[in-house]
Length: 258
View 1 (tube, rainbow, N blue to C red):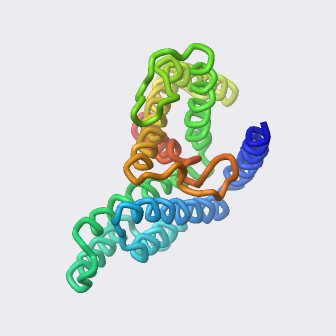
View 2 (cartoon, rainbow, N blue to C red):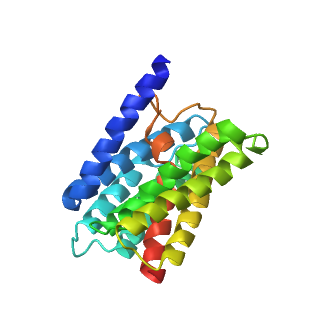
């Protein structure tokens, strides 16, 4: 009971902070995403260290800094140029530093694409009404999947990765995402509704893949949680694993279809 109370209180605090940050937007949003990316990248690097994989941390953090400068509109900080500099620096490090293995270099690429690159898509929807769908679909899916799973769950979804997840819970998560997105779209008069509902389904499915991806990495590295920064919720990646997947989905769907 005590753990549930702590989890609930911290969850509410997180929601309030999220609302304030996203509503304010601009530099507050960008810096917040930068901080979350740095912490999340650190958590992933620490997890990989458990299985003797050592990403080049410094280059990863510099990549986050490059994404920050890109988001605030610094002229030379184009995304393709940042990626170019990152890859060149990584290859030079691989040649000059004998303690960096090819496995470490590839893990460095994976870590920056998985965490900061995905996460910074949140900033691309700065001051855009659709930014809220990133969080509504991800956390709505998680909440409804939990409720449906407890009430109706029988068939295991992916027992080797997450033994408590069920097919019924997964379907409930999709239903919840559709329901919450529909209410949101109706309230703000967002149309066409059919395309928005399709987006909610895609986000729900991908948010669940995001959760399973994080679980898979935890199983491989032998950890229970990515961190303890949020009591009752674990680390940044434990709370934002689904957001990493929904943020690019919402951004590109809005860009190309809405």
